[in-house]
Image 1 (tube, one colour):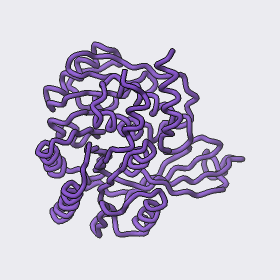
Image 2 (cartoon, rainbow, N blue to C red; image 1 turned 90 degrees about the vertical axis):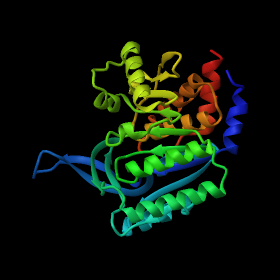
Image 3 (cartoon, rainbow, N blue to C red; image 1 turned 180 degrees about the horizontal axis):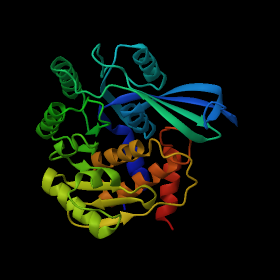
Image 4 (cartoon, one colour; image 1 turned 90 degrees about the horizontal axis):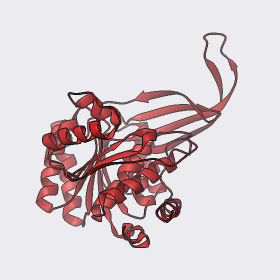
Length: 329
């Protein structure tokens, strides 16, 4: 395997263009001491409110936490939530340069109610229609300007089906990546699942591939290999990585298929784990690491953030320590 310190250090020199849907992850945290007399639901005594960066913005936080430089590009509303989102970026030393405001949509906010470390309910405020023609042009022009002025090492598509990654945007950016010889990694959602043709790495989860493949898929090597072949035939992607929740990660590099199992963890919250997995995978692809090594790193990172409540970025130091322990066993 690659010398550990070499690639962890090499992360620091990478520039990652992140395109996709951003949002605010809002947490209302409190304490439950009784059940409501109005309905059989818990009454939460509110103790704290917190706004965090979510969606593709959480990917940017993970990329930054790993030492690389994120260039986050998205479209938000022109509303109160947009102002809150834009205030959060500089607090985390993230640029607002790639963010476009639109009067035609509202900023996505996911509000989670948490009590005693338990996720009780989520309330979403969002628009999910595709960008308008004017928004699309402005968005693509902004991204191409960054590509022209910056040495980008990998493009990461983070799709949440909120309309930023329309068919036109996906097609144009993949063409740009091929023209500029920049590797691409994708965390897809169902709406444009099979639109990501000729990308370097395609990373659905088990639920997403089950919804898109015309056959049943069990989380076992034979079925997953069949799913990977289906994707390769449809997309022409170089690598397939399928996340299997507590069962680990399946990988296929067109030569060999394998499942990387998870480590024992005290799971608190799975929110944001996919963001962390794709972030690590993107950096690994940018460095041309062996795909199995990429999967091992991504698996450890995804498991790590599941031990914490809420959407949080990976801890690079902890990841490196866990990786060293694993490969020296």
